[in-house]
Amino acid sequence: MLNLNPNNIIPFGVDPSRAELAIVSINERPTLFKIRNNQDGHREFLKRVVKMKEETGKTPVFAIEGNSPFVLGFTFQAYRLEFPTYEITPYHLHEVRNLLLGEDQNDYRDAKAAAMAITQLPQLLKPVKNDLLWFALKVLVSTRLRLVRDQTRDINLLHNHLSQIWGPVYKKFFPILNSPQALTFFSTFPTPVGVYGAEEEVLNLLQAQGLLYYRVKWGKKKVKEIKAEVKEMDWKRDEYLTELGLIVKSFATDALKRLRRIKEIEERLKEKAKGWKEGEISLLRTIPGFDWVLACSVVVLIGDLSRFERKADFIAYCGLVLCSKESGKKKGKKKRKRRNKLLSHLFYQAALASLRSSELSRKYYQKKLQEGKKGKQAIRALAKKLAEITYAVLKNKEPYDETRLLN
Image 1 (spheres, rainbow, N blue to C red):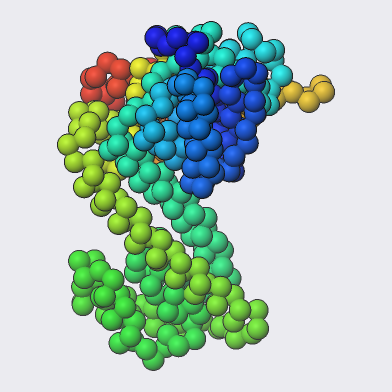
Image 2 (spheres, rainbow, N blue to C red):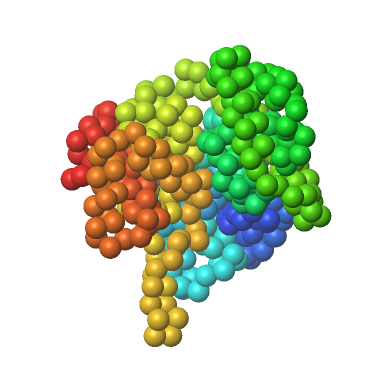
């Protein structure tokens, strides 16, 4: 519990979003500040807070909703100025708002409820981790996940465009499009024009992008396959396909640069996290679908697990439970708006990976399909199960026994 004298502090509540931060201070009367969620916006506001501290002699104290990556930069700046900074989970904020302000929800009321919790319900607040290494790791993880999201979007568009230009034959050349070899090839040869008669150039491209995978003998065989397929193609040049080829070239070039950047960030993450929470990362790697990068990312984004009193709070924070949706006589379910989207994405990735590597995960997936769920719903159910397992493994500090998955 916080040990702060209400007469010597200025409570600030922060409700974060991607574009701006809604901040309410309770000094003499509640005051709403809406600031840009970027470095300049953070600095300008915190300068005003420093001036307020000098004028009143009171210590600013911040209560921030959730542990969102959108507010990471602001949290770091407040930490550097040595302002006490605390976190209130979305679940607890909802309870505080309903108790003190009523059920109506908006940015102002959420931020005001967070500020009021500092003086009236301090037991609900948890100190934000003041660890510079953790801040650095969280920036790396957040940046990588955003790059992966953009990469997935562009690869899906590339599949669509290449199927129009090359037809299904392009998948015979490169079953995995998101690879340096495939992206280099299609950034150089977005259309079949120029491939026939350029065998040496194609071979050099394949070898330059991965000697461990494309050895000379294998590369020559791949070039012959490409040459044979191109020769049989009845490809006609027209204005539409030519322009589409330019788009493919641009997308493939950008995707290749982004793929290299993702690899660089992963190497940097491994270097920075060496020796950091190795026990927790090792425990998560016993769960099906978790490699080192994914396990480290989950540990970084979770932060302090003790801030979640119940497993249900953690699952809701990850956004893996649906909330009710009502419109007139219609009733249904929808995703929670207030969730950690990065953690939700990570568990979805883990679910997909576990389907490839774990027989029990596949059985669980089939079980959900037999219950009447659709494909994405079954994957979401598996992601929720993996999140529950993650909470139990980290809380009990015991490696996971996969035979419990179906229970």
